[in-house]
Image 1 (tube, helix red, strand yellow):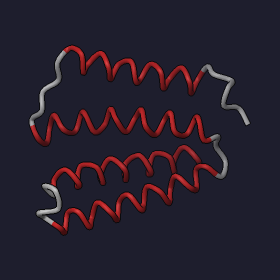
Image 2 (image 1 turned 30 degrees about the horizontal axis):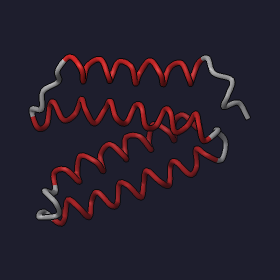
Image 3 (image 1 turned 180 degrees about the vertical axis):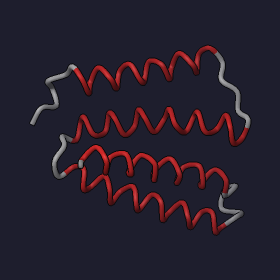
Image 4 (image 1 turned 90 degrees about the vertical axis):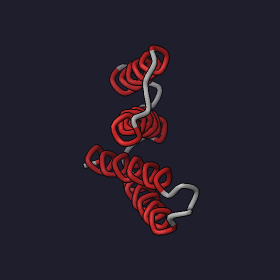
Length: 109
């Protein structure tokens, strides 16, 4: 159940970040308000996850997957371009997140 809630937290956080960008610095205030709602939702789900998962592992997954999804969405929504460095950086984020999640004993409770 923790991973399901973590998935919801990631989706809510990515949605909030994209809405914040779309608000154009709060010129479109309704998108900014929607962003606050989704950040709150992400925090709620993250709090539920942290009841059963270690904070280090949770944050590694949440931040790594969130960064990659925001970058990927920005390519489709705002036609932002990836260069080789951005592509390699995202690959390193995924690799690091996978290593921490699958192999590390540091975060075992």
